[in-house]
Length: 289
Image: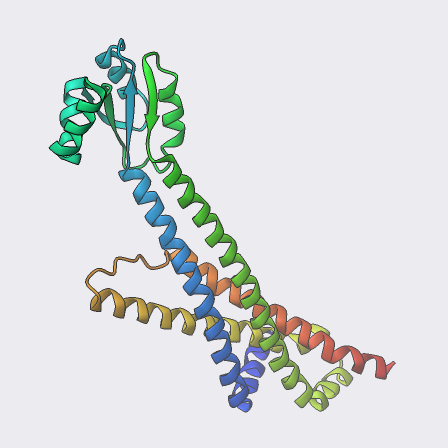
């Protein structure tokens, strides 16, 4: 049965070369668009995780706090790589190195004293991708005045990532519907061209699965070949940019996402084949009754 279905599928592909070429081309374009959005979304997440893991937490202390004690408690927390304690004077020097003598002198002259609190700089482990839980835990330590870690930036990046995920899902849905229509209409045309042969098969006692299987396999074939070609074009573009543009630091889709995209297109192609054959055979069944 399987060999018969594969043989009939091959015959259908050969007989309808132009139709097959058009279907594969359109599926490839649809997959290229979807995979492009998927690639952008993937690298956006990678960039956000890298930013989070590279970020530091600055813990501001009350004037009467024991900085070394607070630093020791923070160092015991999971996800903390190292800490560095800055006294008030060291905090002033730290600000001077970052902002310059002129701005620092202006602040100290205006306030008449050293306005900078002692603080602790916390370096996170590389596997920490979200500093917010750790920051909330640090806030509970006695002597901590405030915790700074670029929360607004992290939250904006999170919103951007969620927006991109939603957009990618919508694009995926649209492309899936597009692939479904292309495959279904192509196989519907094949079934219509072979209607006399199908009628003979039914008269000879062929089961519905025997008649449907070649077209279901054809839908899977169109989905797989089209998606592989689309992903190959995307990878070729990625390699060209990676080798030709020095600052291009983008990671290609991981293998599981590539395999998932191909399986996704295969399933949509099979569904298109199932619907096309069912629609094409139903009127014929009615006429025989």
